Image (cartoon, rainbow, N blue to C red; front, side, top):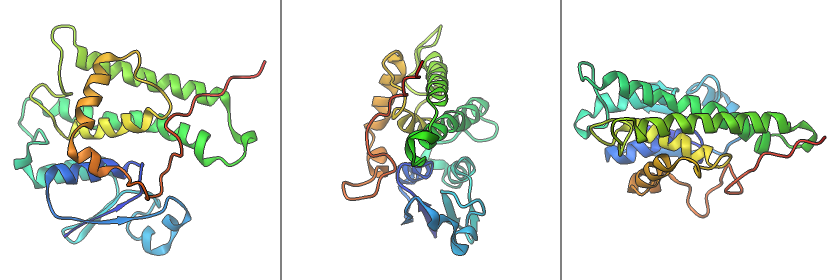
Length: 224
C-alpha cells in the first residue's frame, strides 16, 4: 500500500508526479495548507508538520528527495533512476537534489508574498534578492541543458528521469516569482516535461484549493 499525504502546489507535488509516471496504484490524501498539519495525528507521520508524508510498506517517510530515491529503487523497471553502479548515478543524484536549492528560494518568496498577512511584514529587499537567486538557479539549469559541447533534452544525457520531475516541479513553483524569458533551453525543457500527462495529473483541479492565487508575483519596488 502506498499513501501520499499532499498539499496542492507544494513539494509533495513532485512525489505525486512521480507516482503518476511510475503508473503504480496509490492513495492520495489531500490536506489543506494550514494548522491542520500540526495535529497530533499528522505529526505522527511527519514530525515537522510538513508535506509530503508517504506511508509505504508499513513505514512512513517525510522527505521528498528520499521518497523519490526509494520509489525509483522500488520500481526500477520504470527507468526513472540511475542506480548504484550506473555511470550517470552521480549526475542523477546531483540534479535530483538540486530541486531543493531551487525550492528554498521559492519558499522564502512564498512566505513574503503569500504567507505573511500584513504588508508591513514583507520586505522588498528579500523579494528582490530571492528572485535574483532563482534566476541564478535557472542559469545553472540553462548551462546544463544548453551545454558547451552539446545540448540536452533532459538533465541526464540518456533521457527523462526523476531528476527532471524534481527540478521541473521546483521550477514550476519558482516561475510564480521569476520568469524563464532569458533561459531558452530551460524554457524548452520545461515545456517538454510539463506536456507529460504525469505533470498534468499532479496539478490541482479547478475546484481544488491552491497555494497561489495568481500566476506571477513581482518583487516590490523599494522605496527611496
